[in-house]
Image (tube, rainbow, N blue to C red; front, side, top):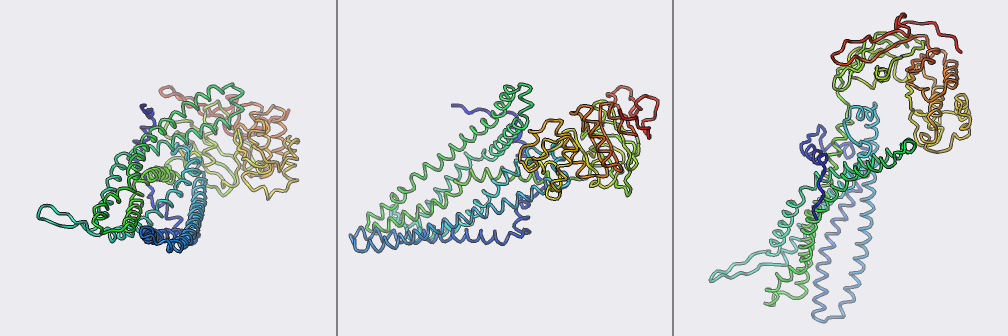
Length: 606
């Protein structure tokens, strides 16, 4: 059966990762925890305990080897009276060893959990600091950063602990069992014609050559696992991301009747998972063959090699059993390296993804674009701006204007004229372009998008976001809901739910106004924040907002002409002319006779 072929995208990702050069050193995955964390001492003691138990396990293997020789010598000599004391001692030692192994397993699991907990918090802090999560998505720096934190951090800590602790224990096992086997096997005499010589420790030499050959075959067959592991993790993350997208957009998909379309997209996306998984199966099949076939011969090879000396009477049955046990123990220790090849390949792939994540969450070099300055007063001053995309394409040209404290400014214009991008620039989220923005401290401003974020949890947590709900009295939160026409949810403050799905679009926009009433910012920016409401509801919300915050500065972005009644200053934008066409005006008044900037009498409310 021929394997499915990797998609061009997967092969492209493999080549990219093989060429990747990360700005962040691999030590940055270890240093923050093991050098600077306050938890390093406890975790270090746990690691030391696990390593110590590993050394005890090696000593137990040496003791068991000696016990094996005594036991089979007693059986061969028919000294049955000595068997019961030997078996009693064996049972006690085995039970103690099992207890030690169980404690080691628990300590190892606790070590992994502590490291993963700290690393997750460390990455989450970096990801959420200074809107880094937004910059990553805005600039398309990285795919699935969230799943790298959730899944790759788990795999990294798990495999790192397993591999590092094994790399400490295995050399001790190799040296110990190698010395034991060297002592037991002695010299192997060889006579060729009149020449006689002996090979010292011949079983050790054979074991090393035997394991070296297995490791070479493992590398030849398994070297493709590193890029395949990376491609598979990316494909799995993309597939999970699409499933989440379908779940989050279930209502919209159902309204469009798009279930079959999404099913097709999911199946196509899963093809990448299937292709990389199948290729990994074929590689792992070859690796398994490299380990299973030699492993099946481990018990008989030392016996066959011992037969010549057994025939001379130089070795007893007990000696041969000790040699066999020592040979198998040495082969198991040496077999760690080819056996761990798959784990090491997965670890390398995870390290690459983690390094790219650390690169992405590191503070970005300042973009030589829009200048953002903080004013001491509450005014907002915009110099002539050119808003551009990442590639330098001009998105909008904004005229110079100034918004005085307490003013109510409406930014108008057709779709694509740069209204939302201008708000992003004022918020400090869009650095691309030229010009200067002077504004108050960011903490004094509140930006309300067309669709507000509602975290999963209680309604009060969603209402008080981004602040803690514990600082807001229930009575005040309930009144804010009532003031924004959400009476039916006034008694559901502590009811947990997915409120982003439970509330309609209009209810979500009312909830956003309730947030404003609770937080009472000095500057409010509304980006199509009433687009899902009818005109009467819009009027009530704007009226209550202006009544509750009479001294706050209000800046709105809207298409509907009715919103103009709540503002006394207007900035009109038009889209940038296509390349090669004559530039259109970038700022006009509503009627074409008034200047685009200036305080205008507020029309009487209807």
